[in-house]
Length: 142
Length: 142
Image 1: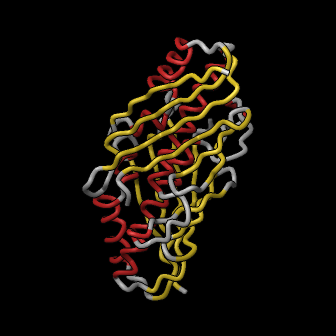
Image 2: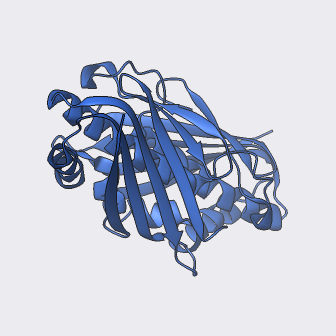
């Protein structure tokens, strides 16, 4: 991973921003209606959850492949509960890993999640200093 | 803002995931080539920076509007420097606010940034426990 990463958010209209990554990709961000936006894109705090999902997802799938697990499908579902008071940080985050495949070993999935949580996932290391992060998994045999 | 937010990342191919927000929007996430991906989307850690940019951007533009500043353009540029060692958290993040308009008051911009940093921005409150976050601004008179 690059040592320096950037993101640029450019105001379009209302509370809607176009955010661009170092790599040139775009995503629309918006505030929801009750906060004066139109909900026409990812909310900024959803971006943190999606980043966490991708970060741990990339770790886990790459470890499962190294362990030669026959994964045919994989999904990471993240849910964050925010504090009532400003700045409304996430106080709890649950991460559910759904691993689909044949003869997937639970121990391999547990180990992959543990390695991501404790060693590899930068998003988890950052968000986990404020939020309690709890991971679970389900294996779907096909 | 909603109290519970979710994000779901679904593996597509290689290290590429499609991430979906609560609100139904999508963004493609990928690992870069040196980490085994194809760089075909936002990297997960870039998502954190883009979330921070949008979060503080929404705060600042809404405060500047309340202060009746004639903002005609606004951009937030975020740069993060990662640690060398796993989990490669951001150790430093710089946030530059570029405010374009006529007769924009520097004091209003400073106050808006300060309020976002210290009170409103959840992403800053979370990432700022690990990274040193440094904000600057530029006013472009038109």
